[in-house]
Length: 290
Image (cartoon, rainbow, N blue to C red; front, side, top):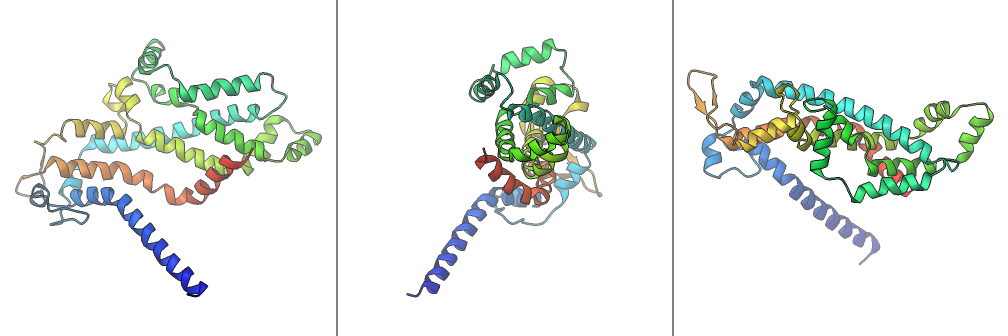
């Protein structure tokens, strides 16, 4: 067997295996989409697999007619953007000084940061702290506790350490301050890793609901995932009906839950194609440098 034939067989096996793996990963999401687009009869009879049966938009009509869901979507988008920006600013502010060998106690600070990755105070002390700081029913209760991720901080520190010292030394000789060097030299070179960490922070905030479940009781501050969680817990309020048309069509809780899941998932998925090239390079560089 020639080398060319062997390579061709290897490529075919590789593509087949990867395609099957991708299909297995996508199957649950495709099944959810299919349920959200299928009729009540097809869902209750168990005929829906990864393709819709008896196509219907009724579930999405019900979801989009719920003003509270649309409000939560807008609020969550603003919360995600604000959280991501603040988290990146504070992570940069913590990472840059920790790369300086002249900083006294640098190793002690690093040990303290690493310890927090393995041990935490627990949910109850955190809840008591938020309550005593009078942050209950406040947007800050959803932002401040996760302002700096130790994992993301270590990635950024590793990346900063991989930037040649000669660049900073040249800037220092030219009279550049640390702040100017950071914003004009270091950060422009760090866009891949910053985009990666920004994606980590954004996805974490978009998918988070446990903190809002504990700290938020005001419906105006409900993130989208908390709304979705409540719908699932309440079995999607199965007595809701679709009021469009002459007849009242009762929707199954499964179709409403599936439509809500897709409604909450698609916006964050749309961000990935724009950041994919930064995500791959940033994750690899932050992992191997330093």
